[in-house]
Image 1 (cartoon, one colour):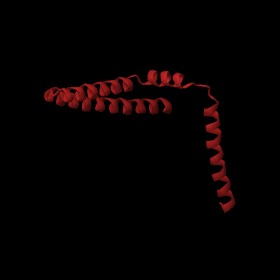
Image 2 (cartoon, rainbow, N blue to C red):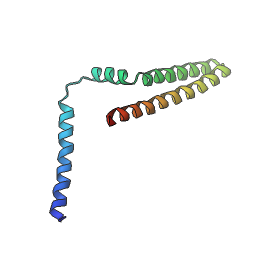
Image 3 (cartoon, one colour):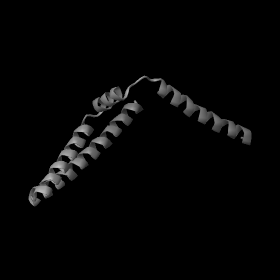
Image 4 (cartoon, rainbow, N blue to C red):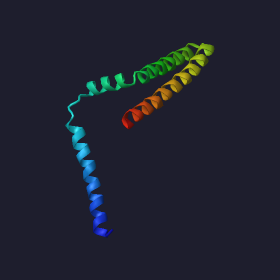
Length: 102
C-alpha cells in the first residue's frame, strides 16, 4: 500500500463521517419528540432520576429542619436511587447493542 492510497482511505473515512452527520441532521425531530422517543426507549432512567432528585430534596429539607435521622435515611435512599439509575442506563445500553447486533 502506498502513501497516497493510505491518505485516500483516511479522506474517505472522513467523508463517511460527514455523510453520516448530514443524514442525521436531515431527520426532522424536535427536542420534544427526541425526549419522548428517548423516554419511551428506556422509561426507567427518568424514574430513577426523579427518585434521586426527590430523595436528595427531601433529605436536604430534613437536614435543614434538624431531623438528622430522616436526613441520613434519605441520603442513603438517594444512593440506592442513583445505583438504580446507573443500572437502568447500563441495561438500556446493553439492550440497544443487542438490538443493533440482530
